[in-house]
Amino acid sequence: MTASGAPSIVTFETRDAMGRAAAADVAAALRDRLARQGNVRMIFAAAPSQAEMLDALARERDIDWRRVTAFHMDEYLGLAADAPQRFGAWLTRHLFSRIAFGAVHIIGQEPDPDRETARYAALLNEAPIDIVCLGIGVNGHLAFNDPPVADLHDPKPVKIVELDAVCRQQQVDDGCFPSFSDVPTHAITLTIPRLLDAGQLFCVVPGASKRAAVEQSLYGPIGTACPASALRTHPRCALYLDRDSTPPQLSQATVRA
Image 1: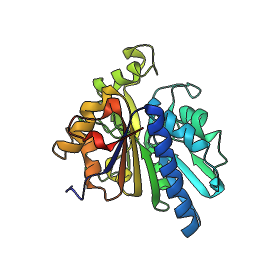
Image 2 (image 1 turned 135 degrees about the vertical axis):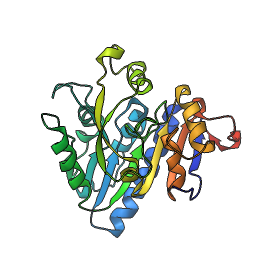
Image 3 (image 1 turned 90 degrees about the horizontal axis):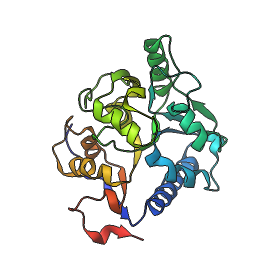
Image 4 (image 1 turned 180 degrees about the vertical axis):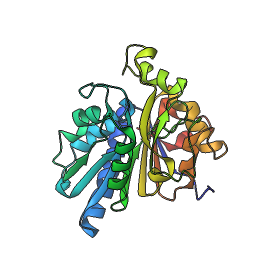
C-alpha cells in the first residue's frame, strides 16, 4: 500500500469530549448518506475505547436507523455463546439494543469457524460498506490484525487468526478478562483491506497506553509492524484522540476543550 494522505486529526482535553465529537461526526456522515442513498452499511469495533463514542451516538437524533445495517469487525473463538466478553454481546449492550437498526449481523460461534468466516464474508460482500468506526490496539492492531498476522494486501475479507501476547494482555488491562490465561488465543477478524474498503473511517483512540501506537501509525513506516499505519492509505479517515493518547509531534493547537 502507498500513502494517499494523512488522516484528519483532532485531539481533545478529555475522553468524554473526544467521544461526543466523534459521535457527532459519525451521525453527520450517516445523515448525509441517508439523504443520498436508500441504506447505509456500517462496521463497529467492540472495545472499551469506543464506549463514550457509542453512548453519544446512541443519543443522536434524526437518524433513520431502520435503514442502517450493522456489522462488527472481530470475535473471539472458544468462548461460551453467552459469555459477556464476546464482542457481539458487548456491542449489543452498548449499542445494538439501544437503536432499532434495520439489520444487525453478529459473528457467530463454533463448531465450524471456517464456515462462519465464509458466511460473514459473504454478508459483507453483498454491498459496499459506507462507514467503519474503529480503534487502534496497543500493538497497533486494527480489529484482530496483530503485527504477526497482519497483511496489508490480504486477499481474504475475513480470516481466523492467533492473537499475540500484547493483544491478549491488553484485554486484561482493559478489564475484560481477569487474567491472561482467560483470554482466548484465537479469533475471527475482518482483514485490513476489508476494513479499508469503506467510504469513511472514524478512528477513536483514547488513553496513554495507545500513545506509542498512535505515534507509529502516523509517523512510522506503513507496514505490518504497526498495522494501523495502513490508515494513512485511506483518503477519508478521521482520527480522534484525547490528551493522553496524543503523541508529542502533534501541535497543541489541535486540542479542543
